[in-house]
Image (cartoon, rainbow, N blue to C red; front, side):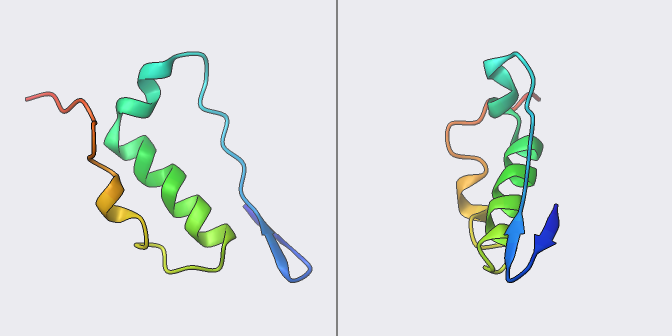
Length: 57
């Protein structure tokens, strides 16, 4: 994460596995990074974190 003039840059390298996106904590990190880069409140996408996620007991 960094600010570049008036813009912001967020980079995430999730790795090789598609199930990374099933992890709600990874989703939270990704969505908050997107919100930050778009100058939005960090909790803007919180309701999307658990949709379709695989939650273990």
